[in-house]
Structures are given as C-alpha cells and as structure tokens.
Length: 522
Image 1 (cartoon, rainbow, N blue to C red):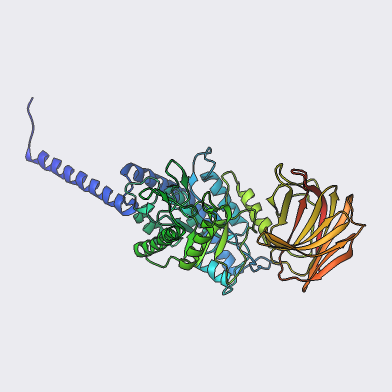
Image 2 (tube, rainbow, N blue to C red):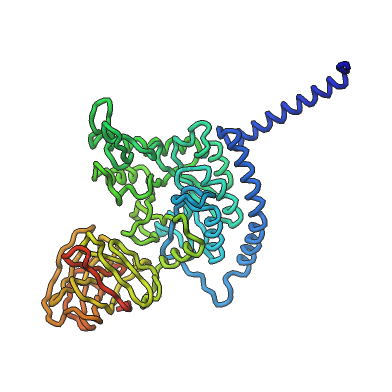
C-alpha cells in the first residue's frame, strides 16, 4: 500500500475544492440576495416551495392570459353590459398555512379555491392607487373590483400567495411591521431583502402596520398586558401609567417612525395604515383608556391618507366613495371559508337595487348588529341575547338607497318593533318604532337617540301578521300601519339603508319574526 500523490491528482483535488468553494459561496450569495437574513435551512425550504408552486401555477397562468387576451379583443359577451362599481370590498388575510388546525389563518387549499372561484366569477383586483382614486370620485371601476390585503408581513403571506397572484393576474397589498423586517434570522417575518424582491414583482404594494406596535405591552406593575394603540402603558421607571399626552406622543412617534422607515428603506410614498390587531381602534375600545382608540385614529389621520379596520357587524361590508372618509373597512376572511363561501359573502354585499323583495328563502345579506338572527325556510327571526333587552339587524348593500317605502309583514307578540331607515351604520339611522297603541319617529346619531314625534293610535297592536311600514322621501319620514300613514315629520337629513329592531324591557325576551319585506321607490 502506498499513497499516490501524483501532480495530476493534486490538481484535480484542488479544482474540486475550488468548485465546491465557489458553489458554497454562490449558494450563500443567492440565499442572501433572495432571502436576506433568513437562516439557510428556512431559505432552502422556501426555495423548494417557490419552485414547486410556480411550476404548479405556471400552466394556469398561461390559460388565464389567453382568456384575458380574448376578452380584451371581443369584450363582454353578447347581451352582457359591464356595470360600474358603486362600492368596493377589501379582503384581509394574515398567513396562508398548511395546517387545518389553525383557526386564525386560511389554509393554502382554501386560498387557492377562493382565488380561482373569484376569478372565474369575474372579480378582479385593483391597486391602492386605484382604490383611493375611486373613493375620491376621480375614476370609475368595473363592478366586482376588489382589493386584497395581508397584515404583518409574514413569509407565509408571500410565498404561498405570489404564484397564485401571478397566474391569475391579481395584485395585493402587504401591511408591514417596520421593525419586524429587521429582526435577524427570522423564520416568521419577511426580511427587508424579501420585501424588496416582493415589490419588484409589480404585483405587491406595501403599507404601514406600525413600527413596533403589534406586540403586547405592559399595562400595570404585575403581568397585565394591553394594546399599544388603545391602552395606557405602564412606565416602570416612574411606577405609574402614562398620561394622556404621553400616550398621544408615543402613538404619534410610532406612526411617524413606521412611515419614514418604510419610505427610506423601500422607496416610494407610504400613505396607508392598517390598524394592528384588526379592530382594536374605533370599535373594540381598550381595557384602561376608552379615549385611546379615537386619539389613535386622529393621529393616524394626520399622518396617513387612509386607515384600514376590519369589518364589524356595525357597518356595511363594502366601502362607498367619499371625499372625507379616512377609515375604510376590510372583510376578514375566516379560516374555513371555501371559495363558494367567500363568493357568496361578496355577492350579498354588492349594492342592491330598488325595488327589492325578500321572503327569506336564504340570507341575502342581513347582518345582526347585535342579538341573534336566523334566516331561512321563508322566515326571518331575530331575538335578543339572554342578557340584553334588544336585537338589531340591517341589510347589507343598501347604503345608497334614498326615497323609498319599506314595508314588512311580521309576527309580533311582545315589546316593540322598529323599522330602521336612512341607515348609515348600526349606530346612525332613523326609526319608525311601533309599540302597542303608539308609534314614534326617532333619530339615532352615533348611538344617541332622540324622539322627533310620537302619536297614539289604538289600532296598533300585537298580531300574528301585522303590516308595518316606513317611507322616506325629500325631508319627510313617514310611518304606516296596515299600509296607511299614521305619522310623519319633516326632519330628514340623509339617505341610507334599512333594518329591523326589537325591544322588550325583560332581558332575553325581545323577538319578532318577519315573513316578507318589500322596498319600492317612492
């Protein structure tokens, strides 16, 4: 046995070493260029995911591109007229995951189904610039236009999503926590390198999701935690909660810091802000500072042109054009929604036309602002919760209605029943409120109710099939019983949609059933 160390073999080993060294360096260079500070093992997994998904959706993209080209040449089919959008929905997601046990995020299979279903139904994404121009009234958009947003800037918001967007010709907005993108070797958040690459696709835009206001913060000397943008935080060095002015200054600094950091890091102008934790601001309030939500909303409005909240049961699900609206609402897509379920959500939210008739074979967009709602088998039932004296519902897609008559057939056995008209949201509307022997016309503004007129009428009484109605036209609000006018006032200030409300002083007992509603032009 002897060691062969011929010059030829030495040169071969050296060459192999150089090649291996170059390959390793090239790999790490490519990793750094595409994935930034993401750890190598995570980068490798992301690379495999990218390659497989882009291959999977590549053929689909070719098919949709051919269809787009055909439609651009021939336009809508025979007899089809493209309608102009009267309102636009905004969808919000967080991560797209593989686990079916994650109750907070949509699975990859469901997201795939949702996007294909919307595309096949004719829905098309728009950009932030288009959305804002439409809301200002500067442009028109086709009906079935919508905006897709993702919160947090997570890797699972981009890698499972971008291949589908590419294939379908869709776009989206990523709301980034500015500080999180700089966390070294994060396997959760997109690095700044990945965000830059995301923007280079032309399919993505970014907005602010705070600088570092998304995580819990201490609100007392023990272990209490609160919301950065809604609670007063604990100042351990002073042994006290911060003052109102300290709260305001802290919120302002984070909002400004986030915008300046995102603009300097990624270029462009950041004009939109998504409030962290969905609906903490303006809706849910806070645990120790009720005024915090409105202060944050005010400060955000001074720094950004548009602020997004998640849709609640207090507002219509679509956004309607307005020159003054800073707040816009987003539909949170639940983890278990199929494509058909999401499509149904959007279809019932589309602006509805008058005349409108509903005999409740299915739910065509009724939303329970509070209380319980059951729709089906040609019956609508609403009932207060066990600890409440009232229940209130409204019909989605009716925000633009004006000058109409609203008639309802109801099974009414106790308490009072009201028809809501001129409904702007669940806290602002006019009312024809019927109680045994009387009817009132009321105005409710931001939850505060005043009585405009009241009249006694012995004919108004409980029954299994009563016919109540409201008419709104010009400055007039009018209430009808069995299709006959019983009271009116000349005190109307706005238009809007319709709803129904029940009330009974005995907790848990307010209820009514409707068999039909009919809305006609006045």
